[in-house]
Length: 374
Ligand code: GDD
Ligand code: MN
Image (cartoon, rainbow, N blue to C red):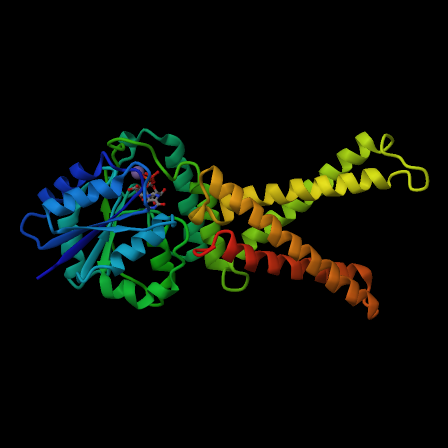
């Protein structure tokens, strides 16, 4: 009978996964196990390499996701794809030691614990080999905030190496945010009843090969994850990001307009309305710049999991985004004008127009620019 599934989310780990599978096999002698690689269509061909391993050993399986990114959602999908009663998640780059798996399995199946996890900061753990004092510091900070916010009191709630009963996960899988990378923390903070957690000190190794995917975004994703847990149900995280980017776009707009008015105000002067020509040029240029700025930022941040890549997709997305915003602007002007006509104060009307346009832009661009079928 199948006992344990080990889920390995991968992104550009082609040269690491064969050795990883070997190490897991060696550690799990005597167990009935399966390994599930969840790859987000890595450009280095990790999924092909995983399929090669899977052909040689049917205990190895591959889930390849197209047009999606994200460690947490990959882990969730991997765990939900297994019939094994107990599921584990670990990094595929060799930083997590598979030798801990049997002990974790014993803890989870003993009945004394619901979750077993490997901590980089527990008594007896080490992070020296990692060679990243900056990340150790950042993790310490993030862990402290996480403890405050969620009340989850572990030495390393950000750990990406843990094990639990598949049932426990599935019961609340629909309530997990799937955003970012802090999946263990998310599980512990989401499940209503307190879970009994057993901690295993981990000697966090250096990567076998390749580079970290979380380095650049780890702080941003962490903050996004916290927001998602806190306020995500009131104002959805993506909309909040979209709105923030939009507000930054408004600042860019004003800056460009100011520059144009300042530089060309005199030159564009025409008799009666000295600054009108400059204003029109400025407005057009500003709207164009702000819109492009918003497109790039939304592509990088708001829709980082569906990021458009390559010259053609980006140009196409940018054009669609432009069209969406143009319609949004028309709606904005139409509605605010109508409101003014019925006696609403112009500023109130303007704000109503802006809110309407943002919701419109968000709904349309999320479907047509970054959506699956766009
Ligand atoms: N499918 C998928 N999609 N896998 C991903 C993605 C993604 O978008 N991003 C990263 N991974 C995979 C990597 O290929 C690797 O197997 C694992 O997730 C961890 O990613 P790393 O890029 O190696 O992260 P790290 O070593 O910098 O981060 C460590 O610390 C984090 C907390 O600070 C890891 O131990 C993380 O698991 C941990 O959450
Ligand atoms: Mn790593």
